Length: 132
Image (tube, rainbow, N blue to C red):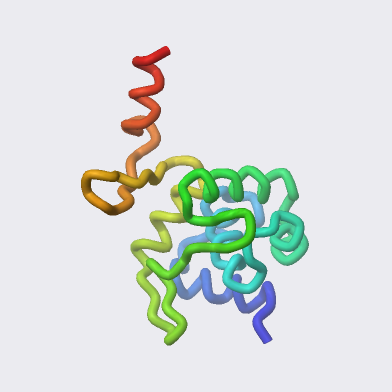
């Protein structure tokens, strides 16, 4: 049975330097993202499972939906987690940065792929600023 303890232990294996104090933003974002494997993207389910504030889960959920990593009903995690147990930790940590709001992810039509940008170098936000 996979429970919160299992998720926390998995996070410690992925990065032993993470703090399990419930206050560190990177830890909270990683906990929510990894918990979505069991809970899906529903904020209430994730808040109950992780025991984190609903307002925090809602904010992270919104960022992940904006980045098209989640939808209202599904999570897109196949770029870092494979059903056979394969795990690409660099992609997981990029999505954690998205969840924290430090990085944005956009579909680049010309390239036919998604790209990650530091929030301050977000090309979409720059275009919006120039238009306004």
